[in-house]
Figure 1 (cartoon, rainbow, N blue to C red):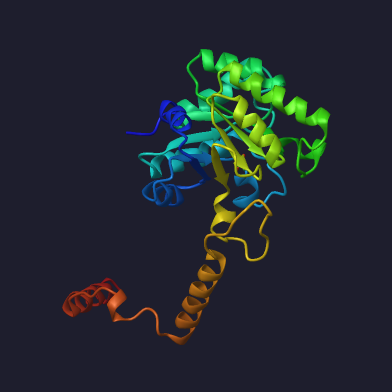
Figure 2: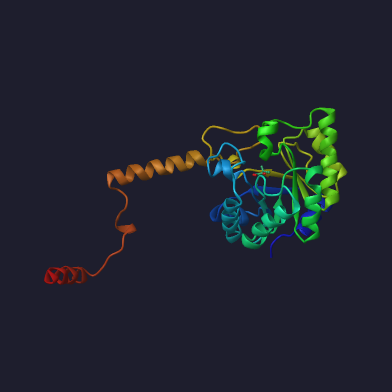
Length: 280
Ligand code: KIV
C-alpha cells in the first residue's frame, strides 16, 4: 500500500519529520523506496540534473510523464508527486489537462506546482476534482529569469507576501507546501501558521519535512555542492573509480574472464561451421 496524503497529514499532527527526495528513474526510485523514503518527488529539476539544461524552464510535459512512469514502476510504498512543468498550468483548463497526464497517464498520486496567491484558484479546482496538490513557494525555479537564484522573503514586504501565499495555498486545499530558499525564521513562522506540512529546502530546521535533490544528496556532481545541500555519499567519485577500473581491465584483457562467459558443446560449433562450408 502506498503512503497517502492522509498519512502525510498524520505525520504533521504527530510531529513526525517528513523526508522527501527527488527521483527520476526506475532504479533510483527502487533504491529510495526500499530505503524507506516516504515521499518521492519527480521534480522538474530533472531538466538540470538529468537532461543538462541550465534551468527547469525547458522541461516538457512529455519528459515529465516519461520520468514519472519510471519512478512509479520502481516504487511500491512511496507517495509519488510529479511536477507540472513551466507554463502548463496558466489557467484551470491547462492545469487539468497537464494533471490528467501526470496522474492518469504517468501514475503519480499527486502534482506539485509553483506559486502562491496567483495559483490558488487553480489549486482549489484541482483539489475539488480529487487531485492531491503540493504547493511550492519561495525560490520558484520556473521563475528563474524573473527572480534569479537567491533567498526569497528577506524584506518585510516579501515576507508578508510569502505568508499570504502559504495561507492561500492551504485555504485552496494543498496538502503540503515546499518552502525553497527562505530565511529560517520566516519558514518557522509559516510552518507555525499552517495545519498542513511545510517541506523545506534551504529553509532552515523548523519545517515539517525536508526535500533534497538526489544528485546533491548522493554527491553525483564531482565539484558543486549547493549551500542548502548535505552530501551523504560521494558517488561521482565512487562511480568514476569503478568505470576507470572497468576501462583498465577491458584494455588489459582481464575482463571478462571465463567466469563471465557461457560455454557450448564444441561439436555443435563444429557442425555449424561444417553446415556453412557445405552451403558454400
Ligand atoms: O524540481 C525539484 O526538484 C523541486 C525541489 C527542489 C523541491 O522542485
